[in-house]
Length: 141
Image (cartoon, rainbow, N blue to C red):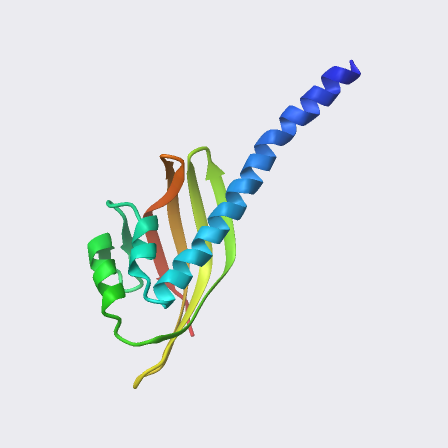
């Protein structure tokens, strides 16, 4: 009976451990995505986004991966800060929904700070996570 209880406890803990591992991995990916965009590393950013990825932008426009890569290559203003926090990861097997908050401050001639909430949908393909869809909502200043 003790062996059964121990085996059950070990098995019951596995999904939680797996979910914790996925949470940590996706939190790190979100931070790498932000750093890649801030640093103009468009190839690194693009490697995480699936070919079919699109975002409902804070303007309400739908932006495709190709359009976002062009924006990355030709930014309107230099990015001074790009911070992400309040990340929540909800894994569902090989899919996960990640939400969080972003603050971006740009420099140049017309400095601006943009705060937003985001949702990213990730799918694990070929052993790696790719973001397949995103949504952003601008927060009041």
